[in-house]
View 1 (cartoon, helix red, strand yellow):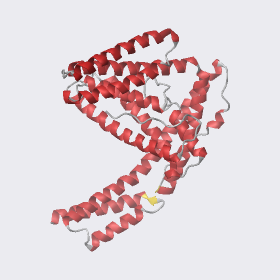
View 2 (cartoon, one colour):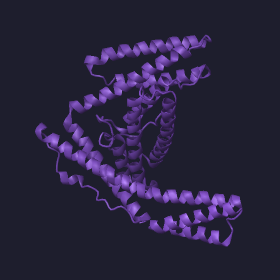
View 3 (spheres, one colour):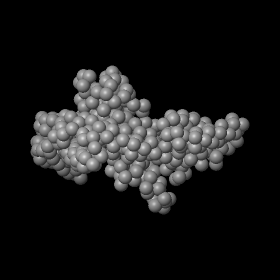
View 4 (tube, one colour):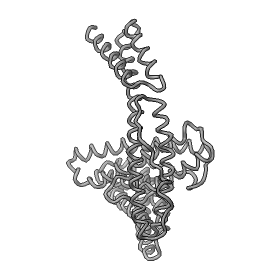
Length: 370
């Protein structure tokens, strides 16, 4: 199972560029691997006719993945190919540790940060794999035991965040899981088949970890609405700045480009300090968050179309080479014109679509004539 990378620094810090680059690359790998894993789990659930059994966990897993993926896109835009100073690096850590509930598309949005969302996604994926019986066989028992040890260490950290009134129960539950793990480890070392013991233990550990993360997030949100408003406002300011960079990249890269205004978070005024005013203020923050999400999606879609056209052109150039017609004057000229237009800044998308479509048609016609 692909575990999320450890986040660098803390909110308000400015980690070294190399540290941020490693984290952003590892998070990109995690986002891609988790999406592939969720697709595999979804296919397995449908094939086993168990879609209804895992529907709620699958929906939450997909919502978490989307929220993390969108946040990574904003961090990558702020990263700007490594051209970052202290200000930009501080904004990236704000995006890392800021709340995701503004972009987390669930019925009851959780006030979780990106690292918490990743850990919750890891726990959910493990639970889904166990539920659908997709964990490896007995020959991988040692690896599974190692993963369980790491997971229970994460759980130990979460237990330390529990309030005094519930901490004893959480400590006892963790102790029970650790004792079960020790028993399974001893049996495995003696050569016993522990597959039947591992699956329930993995399920219970994942459920416990998920409950702790969700419970901590809910307590934090309920404990201090003022802190929530400050965190959300700071997150929106960082998102808005990153979105301005993304919009500028889009306007510079494609034509026509979407023309969505980036909401001015500062225009909402200072955060009120009374409960009766905090509620409406949080609602306004939520509306700004929705506007930012819509604008980000539109700009990202526009940039994605240019990338898709480039990929399509490369695919048909490869096909033309396989057919031995790539060097034919008409095809070579068509390819050159398509590449030239796609490389322009901004690239005229209507012309790009037409030229790539023409090249595609000629290659397909050449294949039929061959």
